[in-house]
Image (cartoon, rainbow, N blue to C red):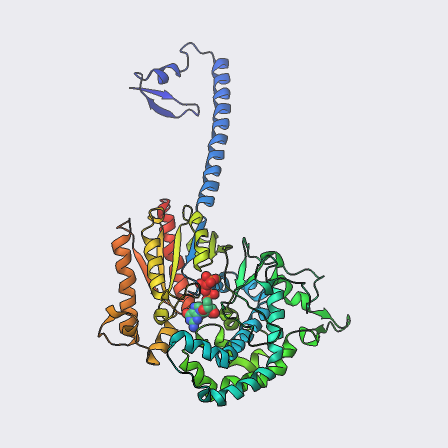
Length: 518
Ligand SMILES: Nc1nc2c(ncn2[C@@H]2O[C@H](COP(=O)(O)OP(=O)(O)OP(=O)(O)O)[C@@H](O)[C@H]2O)c(=O)[nH]1
Ligand SMILES: [Mg+2]
């Protein structure tokens, strides 16, 4: 072993049996000038080499940054609560964007409310009643007398609420996609009640495809004049409805000196005026005991969907109504395609990690769009509403919603492409499950395997969790994968915030682990 001096004059070991090391030894007959020149050249070479090392280090850091982007896919059937969960993420991590869009949601909330009212009127309509009886039991004899009191009431309600049918059509047209093939989606974009010339505020949301509005397959043609058969309404991203309905579009300073704002309530074409005028009749209809009985008889539970606003009629129809956080969270806007939402999530040690959350359409005809995202996703939040055991899919009324959810879950957990993806399960709509069980709806009547177990929230919710867990255990291609189930009611901000914080940490940890960064 020889000890050689290095360029800086330090010492290091080099094996003389190493031909490269031997070749790099300075010549024995080196003059002082030659030595000085050699050291200068070696220092220069080191400077260049260090520069290259630094470049490589920076590139690696960049790589780490890109690779440390977290992408999360929200999956689940239609109306499972995916978009609501996304709104909760926004509320926590991008509150300014959430609040900036608050006014724009007014249009959707109005449409949700109006649709709930028209849905009640459809349910009360004597024609709908006869149709339903014929469908359910063609041997049943129909006694029109049984329906006389409600039939005459229906006519009075229908007449007094007629302006709402026109408003529904107008709002639908304003929010619809121009390329929808349903008759009511076409036609000129008139009836605009906002100033379309001002710039809408920019939304931080990167939207790729489209969203569609409200689940209604009912035929309205018998109910209101001027409304025609409609299926689902779509909102085209190119319409930028959030921009169209934002406050910046509706407000104009009345006076340059005082800066007083002219709000939408001063625009006579704004829908709020029709709603405000119809509010007393809407309230009368919703509080009518006989109407409630009819709805209960027909098992129509409007509170489970957009019916939330029916309990808030005076507030929502007030001229200066501004949607609250809860109103925005409950606003129903059906998603079509896949929408990408970027977040920069600053959280303690994991400061500044970029997240991309993908909100997908959950209806059956939307699910084909999910697969392309499977290859690059780090985590999935799967939403399974557990209150839906007595409901059927809107898109196929022969299919029980819970059964559909279980099948979908099986498909996701057994997918080989997703074998190394963290999966978080939200057993959602627990508030509705509790209310349903307390109202006497029995799980065993819809799921024979539940047998004689108690029809209580505790027992039913645990049963549901087991069902989903067993499917995961049996079908996952990755037996090491841990499942993270949560009981959720994603419209409840306080509780959901705690769960989201938990989920965020689990996802980050799994993600960082997969890159050996922790
Ligand atoms: N009471 C209650 N309502 C909920 C809950 N989760 C979602 N909702 C409501 O259910 C409706 C549907 O929720 P969305 O988040 O739009 O459902 P989605 O999964 O995005 O549906 P698609 O876009 O059709 O795939 C909305 O009106 C929500 O406010 C919940 O836990 N409790
Ligand atoms: Mg959605």
